[in-house]
Each structure stands twice: as structure tokens, then as C-alpha cells.
Image 1 (cartoon, rainbow, N blue to C red):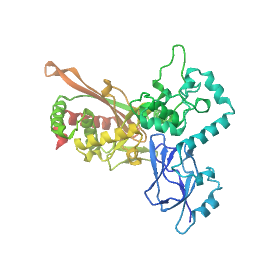
Image 2 (cartoon, one colour):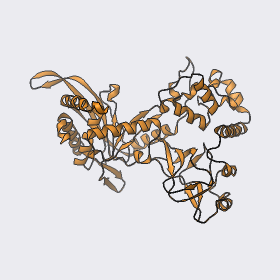
Image 3 (tube, rainbow, N blue to C red):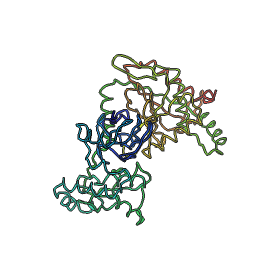
Image 4 (cartoon, one colour):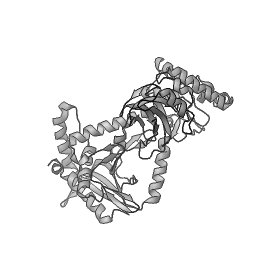
Length: 441
């Protein structure tokens, strides 16, 4: 029996995905767990895996297509079935949105041919307006920017630019209407064109300079749209309570320096944030009411402590997860934190790294921010905002001394977390960070 493979939910907030790359072609034998394609979600580019064995009979979509959650992506011929017969039977089905020519094209088909087809399609659909538009924007047209500030480029060009750390807005487009294609990016690199500081950074048009008196319209990315929607939903849905506490971390600074000397040979350097993550994880274990999610008919307390770490990207914010953080030592937390941050900025987070969070930490201390309030990451019932550890005047007995102080603020969903529970939770965090040796027991 043919196996129809549909678009899976690859991130918690995903409603659709863009096909970034096929990893199989018609006729390929696949087994459960094999990678079928790369899908760009609202969070990152994620691998799509096979959950059944079979032979690829039909590819419904082309690179660059946006596919709704649950829509068919491809069809596998089952055991004993002929792929060509399955393709003939299902190729014109209601769920098949791809073009028949896709069947005969291998996944490894030359990218220049794919881009040529994309350019032809755009030229046909624009009815000649693309050239007029590029002429109207003057200098912007040379880098593929439309009058609205959007950089016109093919999916393959964006992929190459992202992988090479290139700001695609600096590339001169040679396609219809000034559209940037893969060859343009490669020529830009060969000519010594400057690179950005990373894949996520290069994709943001917000850093380009706008001329005096001019304006620049930057269309929302999929990530920005999702962030906006989630923030509005959070503020509307949940009555918040905020609890702030100052934590003196002089002893923590001393222990951190001592541990980092011991870990220097492994090239591991603990951050203040690693201690905060450890303290939060232990506090969540002691206060299960905070390690929870809110549902209309129940408060769900989670047995696992999975701490989400908010990571800032040029295009927005993403929250990868450190699983079972309460069971990890500081060294393991540092290694895991490095791994998820690099994956987030490289757009290569796995589904496991993006899902299952039970609590979130948002740290702006590295920017010198003293104190701020974070917005809930629903359905989680709490999020901790962490400020900078800085020198401040501190009253010690009857004397005024200089101490290193960090301010943290808990934002909690008051439907699930009462003031007393919130206060007990931050008091536990304060105690652990002021006596960090207790976390090592």
C-alpha cells in the first residue's frame, strides 16, 4: 500500500514549512529514520525524517514551496509495489500540489537549472513588472532589493549566502528584475566580497544603512511573525506576576574562577549563566509548581526539568532546550549550552532541541542590562529574566562595602503560580547562587 508522507510539526509553533532541499530523489530506497528533506520552519531549518520503509515514488513539491502542516510532501511505494505505478495513480491526486516534471528530476539536479526555472516562473508571473520595479529603486536594485526593502533572491541563493556568511543584500542580482541567484552569490564570494559574522546575521536586512530622508520597509520573516503572534497571545492570555530579587554573587565569582582554571586544559570556560541554569534547574526540582504548564482544565506539572535558553538572532529570538538540566553538572551544562547556541545561530537545531521545554531563562546580562521583565513563553508558567553581575554598594552589617550583585526577575502566570510560590522559588535560586558550593553537592 502506498505511503503518503505529510508535513510534520517540526517546531512547537509551526503551521507551515518551506522546502529548503530534497535529500532523496524518485527511485531511492529509504528506511525508517532516513532523512528525506530539509524544511525551513518558523524557528530553524529542520530535517524531515522517514517513519516507514519504501521507495520514493513521487515528490509533490519543489524547492522553495511553502507546505502547510499535514499536507502531503511525497509518496513512498510499499513492499512489492512499483514506484511508477504508484506515481501514476497518485500523481494527480487532490493532495499532490507538485508538478509532474518533479518526478523525473533527481534531488541532485544542477542548482543552476533549478534557479533558471524559478526565474522563468517569476518573470512569467510578474508580467514584466519586475524590470520596471528594479529600475525605480535605483541603487537598491543592484543588490536585488525591491522598492519595499525586500531582497529578491532565489531559495538556493539564500541558502548559499547563509552557509557562507554573506549579507545577501550586498550582492548584485543578475536575474529578472534584479533577482539574486546562486551564481551571483558565488561570483560575489570569488571577487572577495565581504562576509557577515554568521548565517543568522547575514540574513537580516535590518543592519543595512538607510540613506538620510529615506525609509526602508523590511517585511516580517516567518520567525518575526511567530514571535509577534506569541507575544500578543501571551499578554492577552495570562495575568502576570513579577518578583524581583538582588543576589550577591561574590562567592560565585571566586568559585567560577577556580573551576575555570581546572577546566582550562579542556578549553571549557564556565559562564555566570551556567551557574544560573544549574540553580534554576535545582529550584525547579524543589518547586514542581513552577516546572509546569497551564491548560484550561488543569495545571500540568512535568517530571523532567527541561530548561529553555533564549538565544538572540538577528532575525528574532529562539529558545532551544537543555533537557534534564537538573541532572547535569556545570561542565555538562556549559557543553550543552554551547551546542544549542551554535546550532541555533547556524539554523541546525533538531526537533528535540526545540521542543519539550518546561521553563525559560532570558539573560541580557552580557549587554550590561541591570534588570528587565521577560514575557511568558506559553504554555510554560514562568520565565526568569537575568541581569548583569556588577559591582554595587552593599550594606554589610553596619558598613557599606562593594559587592558583586545580580538582579533576577521572575515573570509567572498568576493563574498557576501564586505570589508565595513565586517568592519561594526566587528565594531558592538566591540561596543557591549566594552559596554556590551547595550546587556541587
